[in-house]
Amino acid sequence: MKPRVVLLTSVLLSVLTSTSLFAGDSFEKMLKMSKKQDTTFDFDALRREYELSKKYNPSYFLLDTSWDAMYDAIHDENPKRALKFAAMIFKKNAIDIQAHYAAALAYQMKGDDKKASYHWYMADGLLRSIAMSGNGKTDSTAFKVTTIKEEYAFLEWLGLEVLSQAGGGDMVHTLYDYMTAVSQETGDTLTLIFDVSATIRDE
Image (cartoon, rainbow, N blue to C red; front, side, top):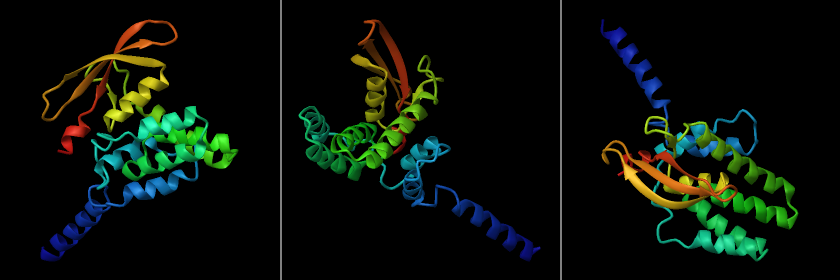
């Protein structure tokens, strides 16, 4: 019986070590795959791998003014400066949606359509991944996000301005953000629920 046990153990270890729990570079591999801009690319998996990677830091944006400086540079039509701050943000989080959006605009200003296309592809894919993760109406159907920054990027994408925020969940295994916002187009007010449990699982 021992040979069979050894063989079974070997097979089990092989399966386990092939999963993202042990494959620390899966996130980096998927980032490289995204460069192909394949329409079948799995952005859900990319975001999950980010949560499991060593680079995951849900507080990466705290006490950092790079986003304001980046948007100011876009407003001033200074693509070089905008890309400088986008690059700083990407070092902290390579799938920051707002940085991809700003980088796309900056490269578009520079006339570099190829690089702009990649960043549009990333921003759009990441946003659609969030949109497909739920409907934001209840805790069980909340939009799943990897960081608080994704919430704000998603709300901006929907043309919503945040009015207030409240928290929910057991604060140990589950955490929800109840974001009340107003539509910049219609003036209607609504509340969307985001599942930010990933940010406390990392603690």
